[in-house]
Image 1: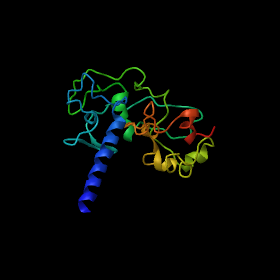
Image 2: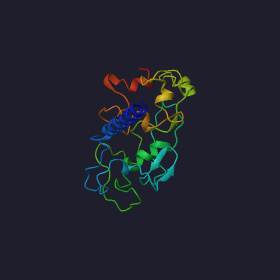
Image 3: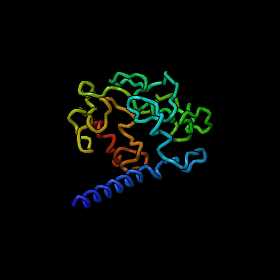
Image 4: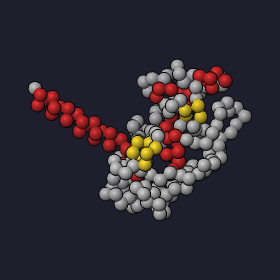
Length: 206
């Protein structure tokens, strides 16, 4: 019986690992076949490494060079009730490629890369035309803006509340809408489907 238990546990771990790998494989974050990826076609190493990682909060075993930009042009609107500040937390990790100032292959200590983000995924350093990030989204903000759901009580559609499933330490970040590991398998690396604006309407009352 013990042998059967260990065999089934081992088999489950293999299947689980393969399923997890399959999620990012073939997605827009799968750089294994890129000409500049000389790390034996590895997928994870562009962002993560098991050894000699950079110690950062919200960045398990981080391996990619960070952007040195400290003054992004932020989103602004007369109807914005949130208190805006410079991108922080996990959003800074996304911007290490998506602001276009750091080469994609600048990982593992490399600083001389020449391949930069371009096209649709390039956000640049002017974020004034993009959804705001890194702001506190709480009940007080929802109370000040009747167009927002209360994240403490409104359901996310992902098993819990907006605060539980979509916010990082109570803050709206890039990962509030996007899953960098493509867990849901949705185009655009979305956390959930935006069919009929479902993702938008999770937080916005319209």
